[in-house]
Image 1 (spheres, helix red, strand yellow):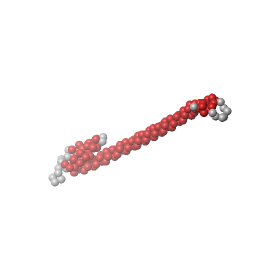
Image 2 (tube, rainbow, N blue to C red):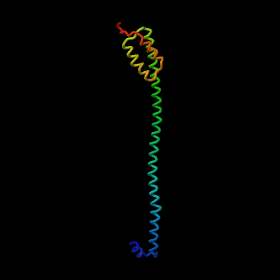
Image 3 (tube, rainbow, N blue to C red):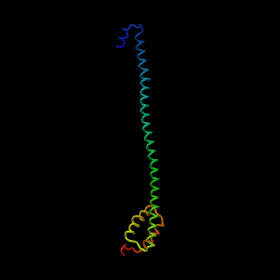
Image 4 (cartoon, helix red, strand yellow):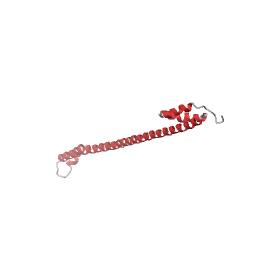
Length: 144
């Protein structure tokens, strides 16, 4: 079909040369041009995927940093609570020992709500000594 068209042209150029030029142009475009376009498209896709991966990695790293900060703050809060618990156990224990007795409610509050959690947080022996002294006190009701 092309050769029929070329044979009728009035360019004065041999139709086989025109056919060869067209074939060469198509070959160059498909080998170099089309291949280059496909490579660029693939590279663009790869770059987008890498950018997304980099973003995910940075987000994970930031979360790790935040987790460390949160863990440190929780540890500090535990230390503060342990310190407050220690202070209250010693203060209340001294008060009860000086008074010479403890009520059932006072003992429950001191032992169950202060000393046991304090001990579970790794409290030291000072509070344990105070609790041993408190445990020796007689338990009285306020009305006694």
